[in-house]
Amino acid sequence: MKTVRAATPMAAVDAANFIVEQGQPNVVTLVGLLAPGGFVDGAGDPDVDALLEVLAPRVERLAALHRVPVESGGEWSWRSVDPDLAQHIRVIRPEPPAADGEASTALERTCARVVMTPLDTRRPLWEVLLVPRVAGDRCGMLFRLHHAVADGLGAEAVVAALSDPLPAETPVAAGPGPADRAAPARRPFVLRLGDLVDQTLAVFRRRVHSKVLLGPLGATRDVAFLEVDLASLHEGARRLGGTINDAFLAAFGRGIHAMLVAAGEVPPATLPVSSPVRLARSAGEGNATGVMLVEIPVGSALGDPPSDGSVARVAAVTRSEKARARAVGTFRLMRSPRAARFLMRFARRQRAVAAIASELTGPAHALRLAGAELAAAWPLALLSGNVRVGALAVSYADRFRVSVQTDGEHVPPARVLADAMADALDRIAAQGERRADRTG
Image: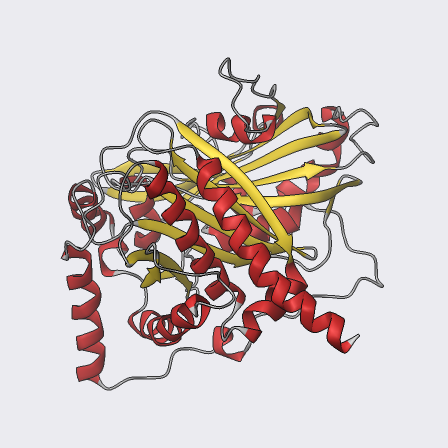
């Protein structure tokens, strides 16, 4: 670190993210596979010096990568410093196979290890970890950014800013639709008060009785990845009465069903899942996320995903709940460190949320980092409180990719959930493929 600049106040909603850092580092992680090219050689080994040279001026322009947190008397602020890039961009070795012959890949095992490693608060809260030859000639990359600096969408924007400029002829993906850009419609005071009361009371309801999904978090994590063709999934979800997010949540219910059966529990008909909602971002805030609870089908009586109506059932809930979450805004118990402290005391015993699931929209084109193509990308879910299962998805370069993260000590392997979820998504996508065949 070199130059130290004056401190600036930290938004209360960002400071709250330091308080909830219990059970697992509160770090947004974007995982990728880099193809040979640029600073990655033909064997999948990175030239770190070449990458540092390319990234140095890009990092210099990004204020988010210069912030060090300062807390004094309960007040939080950011101190701006120049990061030592050699400390933030470095090579790590892939995790070796386990002795029991587990089916996870080297990238999945490496991610499971890294997510439990906190960032050093004496330095700007980010790092780029490179994993040589983690998948054949692919070099793995983990970009980690503390949640106080930015939420998942903010982290994606930072990765895009660090990436190579796009060729002039590259088509630009459409941005958020009017509903995402516009401020929520102004609801009457009585309705807004009712929304706030409902949101708060929902957290205190005790609807989840599973002893597998909820409980004290262990010290290890398990990670599994899956992917499906994006266009087919979009069309299949549309034909079934929902969006990609609705298909994702319906498939997540299938995965949870498989995990509960593997653990010896009888799946209930439905379970409430916490799903973040994008909000308009205020100046100076790194986080702008609302919360909706979605009751997703889980029960054992469900048929095949294309015929049982699960996507349409989820869509009926998300249409109303998403609008209400945007009208309420940032969850009240995450608007300040004091409120977040109360939330975390309760979160270790809550029975209102069974799991966490979130879906992001990434760029439609493949990014490049110092000449190496980012051939695949996944965001990593976060676990917190007493929630032992999470899934996070992103649409990126014609593929829909999902990461599953679970408590490695108390639930069946993440691969159990991921395989069932992949099967459900494939079945939904097959509906879109059949439509393409008929119209082609």
